[in-house]
Image 1 (tube, rainbow, N blue to C red):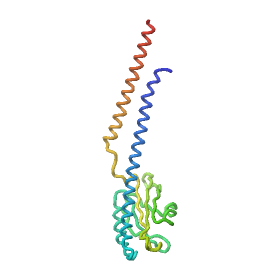
Image 2 (cartoon, helix red, strand yellow):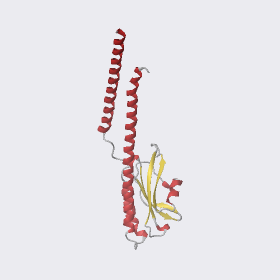
Image 3 (cartoon, one colour):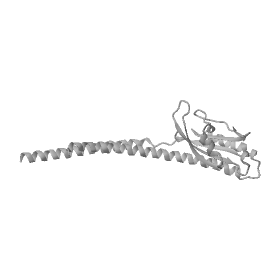
Image 4 (cartoon, rainbow, N blue to C red):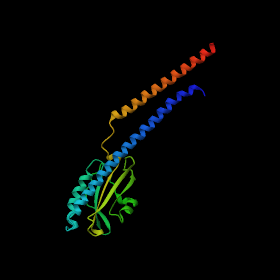
Length: 210
């Protein structure tokens, strides 16, 4: 084997390192997204707990509390939140939307309609592309409330987040450190390989002279 091919090893290590750091950064972003989703789930569940705490109260009397809470969530950066009320076999939006993107209508997606039928709560991921914007996946959590009411007398509360909802990012110094580490490692590997090739060349030359 030609020893000059050893120069390819540092390049292979460099590519492998770049792929690893790219994968690690993606996993960090996914973890931050999941944490954001958990926050929305907890917020909706907390609202449901407040509504369920007074079963003697008429379901219509909860509407103001639900609309105020959901509209607060919807005003958070890149967070989708909405509340619906069943009317004549359909659903009427009872909250005002405060969206940074084009309007999102969950009932436009058959998978969402299928998910809310027969389940008190649940989650679903819907991929869509807002007008003039990049494709994204919206992680949606829905919950019916109050459960002590008849199915046609319950409110449907929905919350959703995407990667654009994550406001915390990996610090720049971390990425800079990764690049610096890769650069130094690559330079040292090249130096060691060249030094090895030079030593081997000198040994070969010395043997020939002998």
